[in-house]
Length: 113
Image (tube, rainbow, N blue to C red):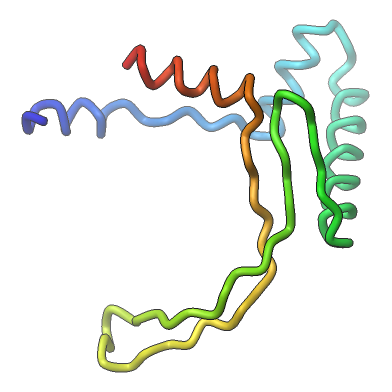
């Protein structure tokens, strides 16, 4: 990559879809009052969190799978005190694996760039 190409990447900030923007977008697309959309989106997120906290797996066909996995313990380093190792204990984490349709869409976007 040329130095000028690095500059272009820095100038092109990634857009962030917030919950507020998502609710507004769905409301506009479907002609539903934003408060109704907000309640459904929040209920969906709450239910996802509840299921994952119980260790359940969430699968949405073509979209992807959310699963709770155990991360192994590892040794980290503090950059200011590199000589002192920090032990990071094993922990649970949420892993997302994209579904077929999402993977294809993401791959087609990266090919266009």
